[in-house]
Length: 80
Image (tube, rainbow, N blue to C red; front, top):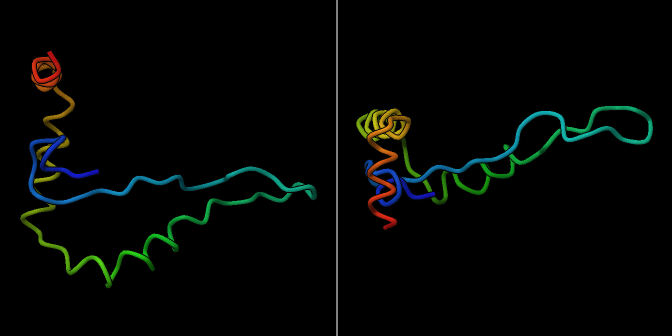
């Protein structure tokens, strides 16, 4: 998801994926999601450069603000 449009944060993006146990196979062995390595190999270094600390900090602030009632009211205002 882009962060500057939906979160009112800095220009950037986040990728969400599942991590952990996906299920069990026929032998009862745990099967894990394997998205992390695939995403890391696809994104870095080809599509993403080095991290910028000010962008990461700005994103953290935007995510924190997104948990407030004021942000929810803002989103409802945007949708109406």
